[in-house]
Length: 149
Image 1 (tube, one colour):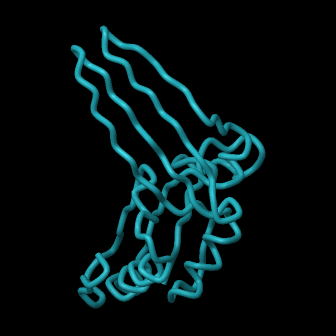
Image 2 (cartoon, one colour):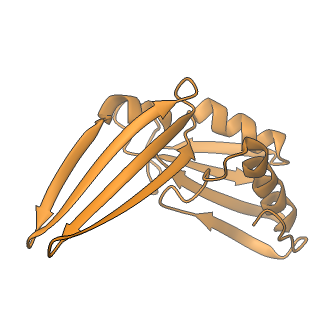
């Protein structure tokens, strides 16, 4: 995704379930957005769904866990870079076996994401609180940006 470009080939590009922002270098995230912008047809749209910084500030838990059918899921989160990144430690315990995964990603406010999208070549960015088009306000469950060429 840092290298793939197919000029004016797509009507829509989707990035759902916080699948954006996992590169260590923020410049790589921007490169992806520039590539998406160049790959969209005129009037094309990019739909980007993630957990916005504003939503995270409201619901943030440093640790939580749940059990389902004897399998335990433990999650630990830390914030860094002035609320710019989140480190996640996920632990799965099943049948006495422990599996651990660590992943880090950038987190964006609505204003930060809109600015990043426009500086990457998008002419218009609309922000919503869910995929149904709710307002991005204090009750928003997620951050959805619809960017247009």
